Image 1 (cartoon, rainbow, N blue to C red):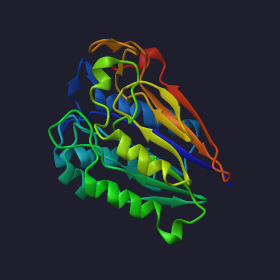
Image 2: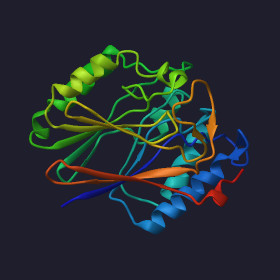
Image 3: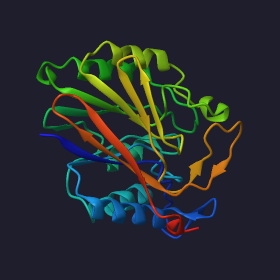
Image 4: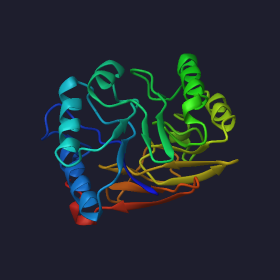
Length: 251
């Protein structure tokens, strides 16, 4: 039986719902994305891959969770991004692995409070290794979810923020033949790369996008988006990005 997973990322919410970032009311765009996505179909699980807050206060995370739970009661996996604060994020949001069908969805924390670039702490790498080698997971496929990308995306200013110890992370993932993919955010654009046997995906933001292949910070006029993934019993991943109509940008 295949599984359907909805990913949203880089929602950049504020403590108050009417606040804007770069001219975009981020609560409105998240509402619009979720409404459109759930009209398309009901997923088996939802992934939120970081930068859920622009201002990482508890009220922001409570509202993100309420926004999701008012539409979806199924399993969720949230991982923090560079704009998030680790303590309230972990206390309020669901961060535990999701085990469904033939798949394990495992989060990895690539963020460091108050820093833009990514890094995976040594203890986090060991925790991930232990999760991947757990006897109860034998024979199950794995999708690892983080915020920062472990590979360059071809935009120099964004590539400066990639995971600093990406080689160590990729080594841990490569050592487990059950890992089928790494799913992230941060870059506010669609990425689909193959690194050896590992598929590396990143997805558009629910609010605004960065211009691909830009030398410096540059916004793109592409609409807010989300990603659908179909995870098959044989380990294959089918995926596509969907977007709001341009008029739905809520600027």
